[in-house]
Image (cartoon, rainbow, N blue to C red; front, side, top):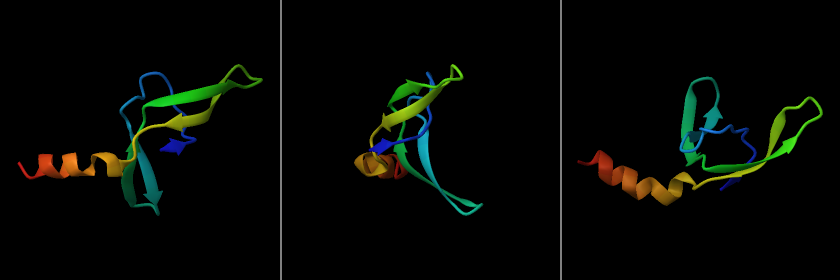
Length: 67
């Protein structure tokens, strides 16, 4: 799953959330890697990031919850 979430070292494995309104959040994937571009102010911006979509591990989560 490609995204443009800004990520820093140590963010791997964190959830990628879809926010809907002020009170709903859905896990849609996991953060695993990103490519950055250097900005003029010496900061970096995410150009492209990727990780598995939640669909790819939904069955495993369901099985774990049933235990």
